[in-house]
Amino acid sequence: MGTVVLGTGSCLPGKILTNVDLESIVETNDEWIRSRTGIEERRIAGKGEYTYKIAADAAKKALAAAGVSASEIGLVVLGTISSHMLMPSSACFVQNEIGAVNAFSYDLNAACSGFLYGLDLADKYIKDDHSMKVLVIGAETLSGRLDWKDRNTCILFADGAGAAVCGYSESDRGVIGSKLLSDGSLWKLLHMHAPKSYNPDLLVEENDGTFIQMEGKEVFKHAVRAMEDSVRGLLKKENVDLDSIDIFIPHQANIRILNNLIDRLKVPRSKVFINVSKYGNTSAASIPIALDEANSSGMISKGDTVLFCSFGGGFTWGATLIKW
Ligand code: UT7
Image 1 (spheres, protein in one colour):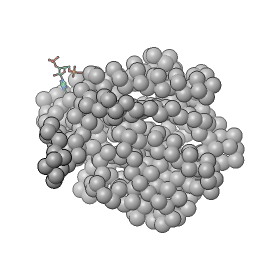
Image 2 (cartoon, protein in one colour):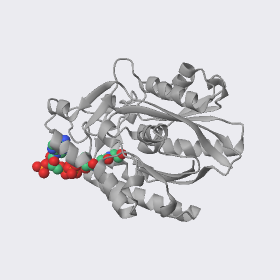
Image 3 (spheres, rainbow, N blue to C red):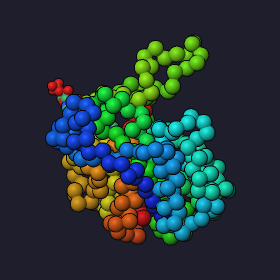
């Protein structure tokens, strides 16, 4: 008995930016990007494809897959760090776009962990009120939040959206548990300033632009360790054996982080879903996009134990287990 995913959907902008395309933007090359990140190409939002637009498109697909109408949704929670406005939230724009007239809606800022944090919220709301249906979305248009002269970041991050409709099931399926963590003391290693303050007393001295800034090597080390710890901690807490995991869907940060994590956890590679080569790092959208691809391609069956884990700016990180 618990919170189940009733349907998934995703939306990837049509415009593809390959590594070779990037060679004419910054000093980089296809071979370097492939070997250091595993990324071959990524999607970039086109005219009018704001975060809420691609989020709404993913949401509509998830609703259709779930056989749930927008008016049945009680909450829209959208993990994002790349809204086109600070207020209203992108979640409110999504609500309006899809006609979720009975929902309350808000954005959630947990960077790349946004979808797992949202799923945890959905689980709590649904456990409290079994009639509740929650739309959990992760969506980003990070192409608008990159310094395209910074080859450390612009080769890595990209755009996309994924969504899941969650509801209650009387069966033995559902969210088993999650272990979510954060550490604000390390914020500087991966951050993005807000627009400059109009109150001179609140100006942030080092604010040199509203784009992602990253200490790649440090983030790498923390990401591998943190994701491993959260997975091990969650499995222990829920008394679940790693061998009983049917499919592992990690945040698609980059292939070397994933390879390190897989080696440390000793999960068979055949159980790990990886699509980072096609989409790059889409932050909060990466897990729901991967989930939708795995789900719609028939890789996940009812009753399977699905493991997720994430790591992102904050730092935020965590792991979630679902009996599908
Ligand atoms: O969701 C979590 C988000 N963050 C991440 O997933 C990022 C984690 N970090 C990383 O994935 C890696 O640190 C990067 C892929 C960002 C960078 O890889 P690295 O192996 O840590 O490279 P590096 O920064 O140590 O740079 C190595 C060399 C340097 O040249 P020298 O000093 O050895 O001559 C860089 O200048 O590679 C150079 N370099 C590049 N060359 C071509 C750095 N970026 C590039 C580039 N193209 N894009």
